[in-house]
Length: 256
Image (cartoon, rainbow, N blue to C red; front, side, top):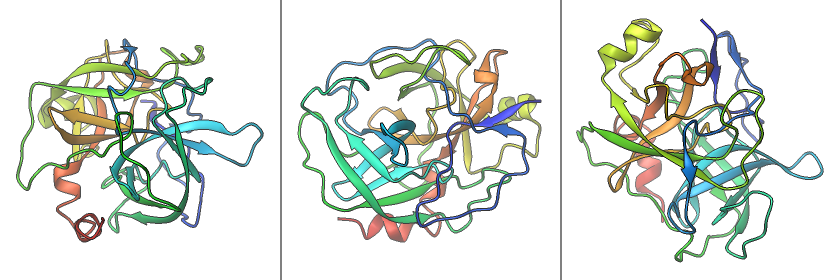
C-alpha cells in the first residue's frame, strides 16, 4: 500500500527523524474534484512557502487561529506563510505575508504513525483580520462530527497534473473510524485521527496542514492519504477536538 504524507517537511527550528512509513514527500497535488473558492470564502486558509529557493515555492496548507498564531500539521512546517491568498500566481491585494518565528509541535506527535499531527506556528507580527483574513473556531471538548465537511487548498487534480491558480474547495463525507480502518488497517488509524472523502472529492499531496471544517468549527487538519484516494480511500486528518484537548491545549489557551 502506497501511503503519502500530504506535504513536505522543511525544518525551521524544528527537527524530526525521517519517517519509516513509505510515504511520498513530493507535495505536488491539491483538492480532487474541487471547485474555485470565492474571495474571502475561506479567510482562515493559509499557504506555507519554502523561502530557500527563488522564487519562493508554495508547498503546504495551514490555518489562521489567532492574529499571531497559526495551526498546521506537524509534518508541514515551513518558514513563510501568506494569508488572504486566493490565486497563487497573482497579487490580489488581499495577501498578508509573515515569517514563522516559533513552532510548537504536539509533544506526542509521532512521525512514523502521524498520530497527533498538529503544530502551532507563531509569526513575527500579527495579522490584520478583515474580510479576507480571520481565525477559525476550535471545537469544544467532547464535540463529535458527522455528515459532510469542507476541505480547501491548492495543487493539482492528480499526481503530475498542473497547479490550478485559484484556491479549491470541496465537500467531503466524514467516514467513521471502523470504515477507515477497513481501508488502512486497524493499527494505522488512531483515535486522534478523523477520516473523510470517498475518492471523488478529497485532498491530495500539497494540501497537508490545511483545514477541514465542520460547520463553524475546525474539525480536522489534513495529514495523509493513499494515491490521492483514487481507489475510494478516505483522506486521514488530525482530529482537532482530541488533539487540542491534550497537552498542546495549554498553548491554544494562551494565544491572544
